[in-house]
Length: 171
Image (cartoon, rainbow, N blue to C red; front, side, top):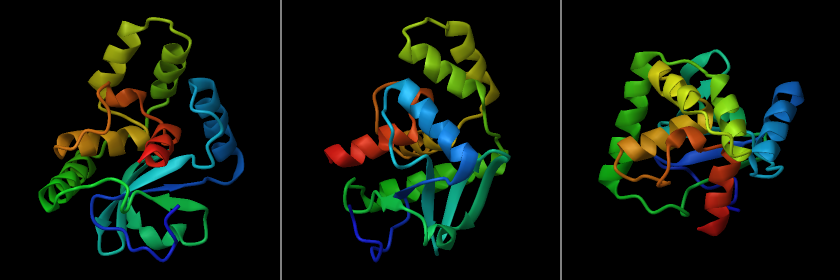
């Protein structure tokens, strides 16, 4: 794990934990999805100047990275090699999603669960894709894809915070 003193660069992401009932629900969902009990239930994209763009229960927003200072967290800094162009393009992609004011999506959790149990649900996947809504980890994966540095070769709708943590473990 990178020390908390590391300064993330634009395009890096931060994994963090969520206290309370919401965090426990996400942890159980990740376990059911097959990513195990990760200590991180949330992810945000660093966009520079101490700011992040993230997806929360009420939608996409820009906020201060500082709010995660006293939480268990982990940065992708130094673990995923990005060119300066990719960093810029990832941030541009995140700002485009922010401008669209996309929302959080509970059906994404349904699609994740059905995939885990190998239950085909092409209509649910198509519905989720058509809404443009997503959860935090899907936003980060989509920004990396749109920025020219895809993290996965599958649909970004199948990415959880636990998957991103595992990706960093393997880096």
